[in-house]
Length: 126
Image (cartoon, rainbow, N blue to C red; front, side, top):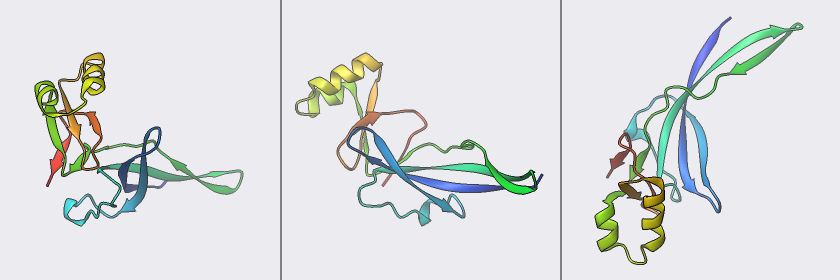
């Protein structure tokens, strides 16, 4: 069975009820070549393995789940601690409640203004 690995980039945007993304195949994971769409606040890379198998005389493509997923890269975002949210974010009651309920010590404020969980593997780009 022959297989090929393909690399993809997922551009992350806030939708009406959830985080949405546009996915494109890319040749490499070079950060300098990423052109972030206006509505996107960040992106991540991942790979998929595609193999062809013959079933009843027909070739069928099989796709793996995502592998080698990168951290999320955020453009022009900032990381805020619980204290910084308390002291510097207006109308912060819901955000603080959400942070407390979920056990978050820090959040990321994206370039589009939303707040998301900060994970240690997240990367902030200028």
